[in-house]
Length: 122
Image 1 (cartoon, one colour):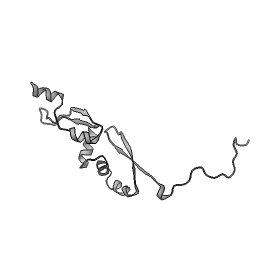
Image 2 (cartoon, rainbow, N blue to C red):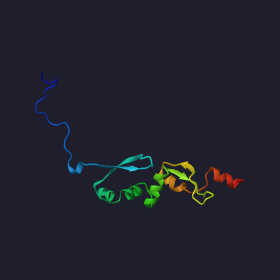
Image 3 (cartoon, one colour):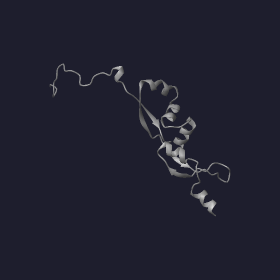
Image 4 (cartoon, rainbow, N blue to C red):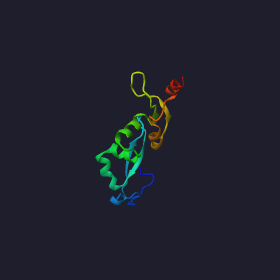
């Protein structure tokens, strides 16, 4: 039985990639559940990314240091309360979801959550 569409030597549909045409993509995590976004890198960025992936991500999202980027991921982009609990730990209540890193940096630990604000009013 012969194939349905027999084709003899035919030119390739897709061409191989040459070095100047290659595109590098990395997945940068933005939330603790693993959500994130693909970022395309130029050839000059690959070595910098490979040397310090979290540092590269922190810089990409506009954080001054890796610790702030990691906290943004760990909080899943929720700006948290600035107050302390009765046992002295920082409150873990959200004061709002902020998907944009610049908004999170502005709001994170900048004010009380609903419960702490209510205590102040009493």
